[in-house]
Structure formats: C-alpha cells, structure tokens
Image 1 (cartoon, rainbow, N blue to C red):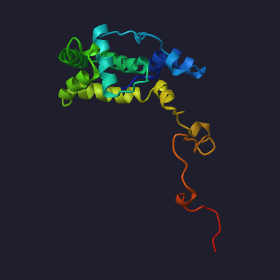
Image 2 (image 1 turned 120 degrees about the vertical axis):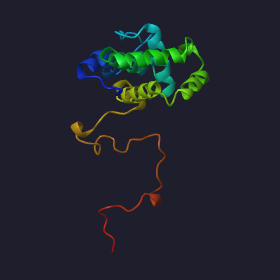
Image 3 (image 1 turned 90 degrees about the vertical axis):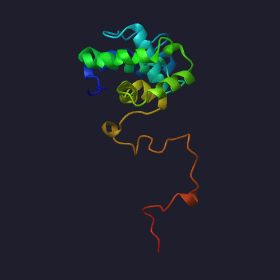
Image 4 (image 1 turned 120 degrees about the horizontal axis):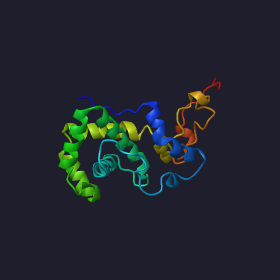
Amino acid sequence: MRANATMDRREFLSATGVLTGVLAAGSPLALLAPGRAWALDLGTLSGSEGAALLAAARTIAPHDGLDDAPYALVVRALDDSAARDAATLTLLRRGVTTLGAGFAAAAETERVATLRALESTPFFKSVRATTLATLYASPLVYAYFGYEGEAFSKGGYLLRGFNDLRWLPEVPLADSGPVFGAESH
C-alpha cells in the first residue's frame, strides 16, 4: 500500500480558497480560520476520527501558534485518500482505534507517548508522511513562517529581499569574506 499524501489542484483550491483569499487581503493568520477547523467536510471519516487525526498531525508537527486550519488540510488529505482506497480507510480506522478514544483531548505528553509507541507501524508512517507533505505545502503555513513562496516567477531572490532575514544577527565585516569585483594588487 502506498500512502497518497497529495491533493489535485481542484481539491487544494477548494480546501484553501477562502483562507488563501483572506491571507492575500492581508489579514492576520489568526483570523484565517476562527473557531473550529471543520469547515472542511469529511466524506469518509467520522468527526471523531478526524479529530484524532488532527491531534496526531498537530503532535507530529507541533507549532503552537499555528491555527487548526492547516492541520485540517492534512485530515482532508487523509480523508480523500481513504475515500479512494479501502485499504487506506481500514488502516486509518484501525490506527485511530489504536490511539484510543481520548487521544484528541489528551495532554501533549500522552499523545507523544502514544505516537512514539506506534512509530514503526504503517498507520503512523502514513499519517506522518501525509502530515509533512500536506502541512508544509500549505500557503497558510508559508505565511506563518514568513515564506513568500518561490521567487523565480517574480524575478528571483536577489532583488526581492535576498538579505532580509531580520532575525539573524549582522555578520561582522571581518567575517564576511572577500568582496567580489574589488581589485586587489
């Protein structure tokens, strides 16, 4: 069985269209998805299974300041995979059962311990692969981390903030290396 962690363009746009539009309008990330993340309808998995998978995704890739909306995209990708493949549906349902009924509401340390015990299972590997592929491909997460996206279509990085990493300290001139183009005789 192959874990399918991709969405086609139409699915991705339907899942992120409104949220990306709000992001493009310049609203703070916290306003992107106020409240519950279940604006994404689950077609195959139940709400409690989705909540457990969202908690698993949030535990696998924890970012405290990140809203549930990008994690809901992970659940949506898992739900879509389960809809297309009966074996994936069975894998996810058995895995959620293994997590236990209180997993979604459990403390983070308990969730980490539960997932650590499942690290070698196909369930964990599938959820982890989908989490990493879907979460870090989301424009919502790009905005959270301050990533502006690829620069090729916008003329490259050189004239678009190549050196705008404000969180890094200034490098002393002595440690900067040679200045190219300067003649030395």
